[in-house]
Image (cartoon, rainbow, N blue to C red; front, side):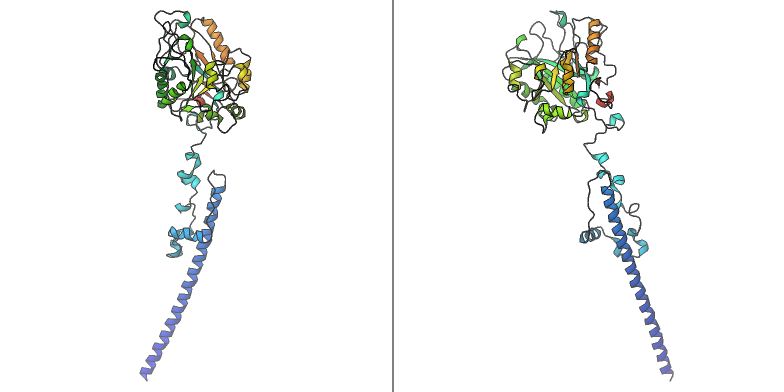
Length: 429
């Protein structure tokens, strides 16, 4: 009897245990189902947040959030903890923009995707306080030198020969010169640079390649400079053999300066119909896009050398140099640069056509008063390149070309826009 009673009690207790266990299992299953539902909701919200960030004016490339099986695959590959542990330990239930680094807004946390810090086409300039630098080349006015290689001979044949220039790199670094003029002659074995054979032949660089190399060395050492403009005059009549192949000048230039450092007519033309068409549409490029470059300009105009170099005054395709345009040539497809007197009526038209202009200002045989007057006239006329025999102070004269508001170049008084500053043009340490 006792045995039967004991067995009944055992069966009764066992039944209670089973009922309790069954209820607990049901609660566990319901809890997991609820956690899965909550996780799915937040994952969807995260995808929507990410998509919104990548399309809301941040400048980032728009990427669509994965959906369906793709979203599940991405979640699996990152070890989504929604399948592990209780709800209180699941980081996906927290705000993903503050806790989960995989879903942080890339515009504020990921520098590798922020275009304001990595985009190489950014137009901000570190030297101008982070402001956009939208100054174009035709908006400048620069100091230049005439016969930039010249040294005064021991016995000057003429008063116009009584001046000496520093070496080209010192003109660039110490005097702020950004435009040069080199006279080129055919020697027995290579192109030479001097003024007049025998009577005015002293020079700071004997050969054309030597002169270009001095410029290139300084340019490479100061890659943030504005473009350096070098005028080349072929002067067969004052010494040497005739230069009968203009390709030789191009070849010498390219033997020293690589294509990335050389600003050519083809660079300006781009996809336009011609150089002239490109300038009519946009003007010259922004200076920030031309920093560290050197451009060459053939000074000869309306002679055999100019005719050959422009393929019969037709184009400058493949050439290393631009070519000077005479007043009657402004409509030609290669027309981009002119050398004019400050009082020439063609100056206004050149400005209207976004052409670069140059003029000679003061010669060694002119008085200080005349030089000061010509300097002021050339500045006021908006001539871009002011070429002079006296880029710095000399003991024997009061006059020298002082662009006091340049660093070293300044904004052109006629062609510069309101946002131009000397520092935006160039501000080397």
